[in-house]
Image 1: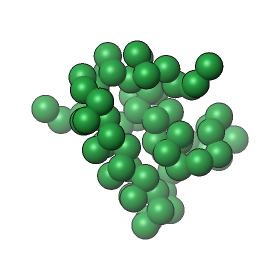
Image 2: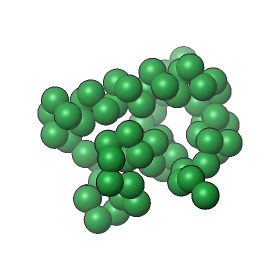
Image 3: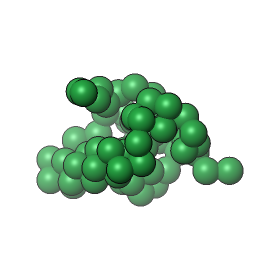
Image 4: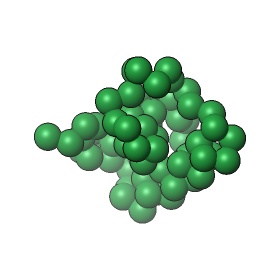
Length: 65
């Protein structure tokens, strides 16, 4: 099973397109600024895309509408 689940993420974000845009921006920020909101050992994923999805899942990224 993929973590976090796409269903949970879509309940938080609302659309797949918005989710892709948010994750894309967050990954770019992670690479440019080397800033992560959790400690490295708290992430289940090793890749930045997965880490960004985990941050959204744990409500660490707030979405303005």
